[in-house]
Length: 261
Image (tube, rainbow, N blue to C red; front, side):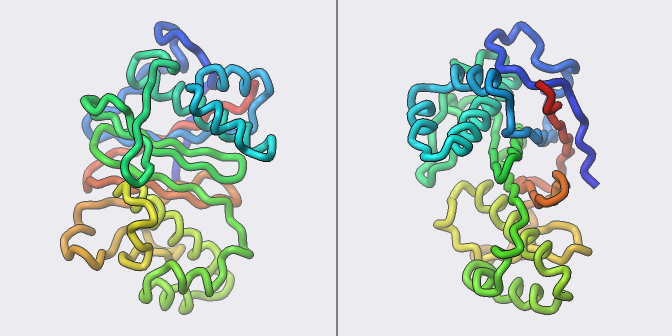
């Protein structure tokens, strides 16, 4: 079971000399560390405004293009939290962080000399952030929607063996198994950095609720699965999540930001 350690409220601070959180080791990754942060996107209005001030003009413009206020707010908090957390790992201020994007749209630090890698995902009112110095990382969180866990969607996106495995499960286990499969596959392709240009049916993951998360095989390389690890993350009732790392030896630490204002 994932053990999230609750820490004090995240503030959109601008001075890296002022500790963001109580324990400095929360930002010490080491050579094998993978950090997962869980953040509520439902923040007080004053926090939202502080986070917006940290965003670049481009990010503020993207926020303004959302039609609904809740989507604008979630985007601002998600990006503001990302900048605030990255600033602590990099010992800089959030506004100075610059991003670049891969050919497939994956965000990364513009300073390619740093070995810090990150990924983020949000669904409903929760966001997950993954940070590591091991190599590429991918994380995915999904709010469970039974109406989305449809056999037609599974046949469209899952591999033949995954669809067959899903069909063999008891009916009451299929929704959870569907989202296990979905999040593990999404985490993997996000770590690969190729987006949906890498078809989801070209590789297999475990999905049964009784089995550990794992990448089983890929159609393009017999040995690739042996280089990757996938781990399920228990983020709370009504959600499923997973993280993928190109390493077989790593240590996961999970932090939850206190949701109080």
